[in-house]
Structure formats: C-alpha cells, structure tokens
Image (cartoon, rainbow, N blue to C red):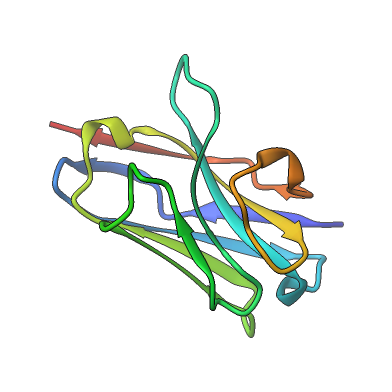
Length: 124
C-alpha cells in the first residue's frame, strides 16, 4: 500500500520560513518525480514545485520561485519543500504527490499518488 505523509506545517509569521517533508512508503521512491501542490480555500489546487527522480531538474511556480527550494533524498524515500519569506497568500493546504517517470510537471492529473495534505497558515 502506497502511503505519503506530509509534515512540518503549522502557523508561521509572515516573513518566516518553514520546511515541509514528505515521507513515502510502499513504492520505489526513486522511480517517481515528486510534486508539491497547494490549495487555499475557494481556490483550485495549484502547483508549487517539483523535482525529478534524480534531483537534477527542479521546477517552481512563479509565485514561489526565488524563495523556495525543493529537494529529495532517495535513500530515505523523502521529499522536502523549504519556503522562505512567507507571505499571507502562501496560506493553504500543501500536498506532496508522486508521478511515475522522471519529471515532476505541473499537471496534477499526471500524478499517481497523493498525501493527505498539511495546513500552512501564515499570519501577519
């Protein structure tokens, strides 16, 4: 059974930082691209970042580029998303997802497995 578990969310002040982690089990993690998505109340789910199977390709949404860093550790079957200079508009439920294949593109429909999501709330 495939399982993805996000951790590291919570309440953070604007301008602060946090790192989300995604722990996987039940899959050969190194065969999957890792994507990060978020969904704010009333909004559609949107792509945040993605990292390829080897970690060589990293993609970022314009909204987080320059203040976020995505990483993965294939030896531990984990992924991470570090976000800095957090803004109020970063408040959302964040999801990690796995996509079989090399890349981790923005198309949510192409992902095979999803975590349950974790809340990130940025306060002023």
